[in-house]
Image (spheres, rainbow, N blue to C red):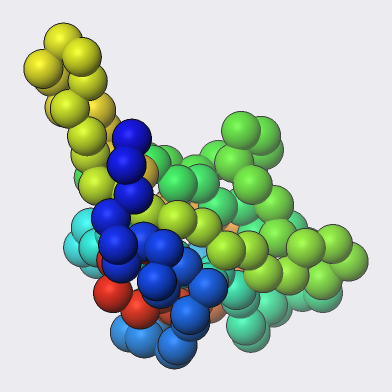
Length: 127
């Protein structure tokens, strides 16, 4: 697949774009709207109990649901505190059917723990 000129020009050029905050608890929560294609920085604040894990999962908007275990991805004070992801638009497969876009993030916490998950667009233009 050939890259778009903006893909190459802006891939390493980052800026702090729009940010969405998702309140995390023991009920899976997701972003309010599908994420636009681009690179995103995901990190958390206000963790109510140090050492706990924040479980996140990327997938199609309206469908993805995080679980308090794999295959969701853990963030924690004693491990990975932030992660960068890429959201790509859905593409047509050889069959002509569109693939599902990974344009949403879902988050869940162990029972009784809360935090805020921040999803910030860091790409300029296309990615």
